[in-house]
Length: 275
Image 1: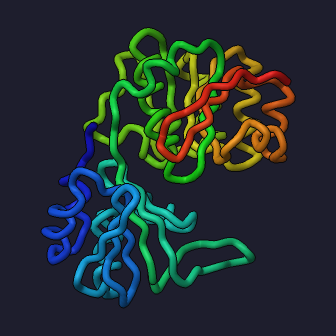
Image 2: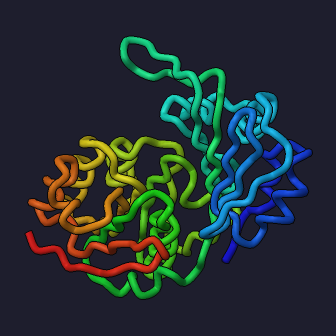
């Protein structure tokens, strides 16, 4: 298991770092900061609470340290998250700023959910034996990105794999990629898939979290070009994948041949897809 732990500590207020380091270095999954309440550490099946209440300055410190005042990184806040160095994702809650019905940012932060990125080399070795395109299904926090990362790495040792790493979470600096892996970072999935098809000549394209119809359409276009696909999506069963409107075209067109359905303990069951 690998984790950019020092990168995580660097975005926390200095007075919080010693306790977080002592309590969570080996098992911290999430750190939740809520205004006026002590910080909560999610450690597997239990929670631990720090002693000091979280202030607004603490929340602002985390965001500023994570983005390094970068306009590109801060722009993703309109989608409710930012990605910190090391691939750690910070979810944001507070007062949303809207224009013409579209969220353009979040001000007056009230809560942060920092999800710790951990890498487990080798967990995708068995999954890499399956032929055809693969979709990983799981609920938030069940390890979709972690499994996808190593599946890419395993396949990328022997064939060209191009990755649209929209949030910079799949392969942050310092993580091994695989010798045949090319990563496009910070680009929306639909545009990125088209760019990789035209420019990189991939045998396989990988993306994290199919969430909208443009994502699905781009994957359909890539499949029609004969490219193998690796992707993740929210869900807990093959039946749910078949029923959700955004995924239904992918199912009906037989884009994915294998579903890896994750469980809460981060193990998975493989299911062949039969349209």
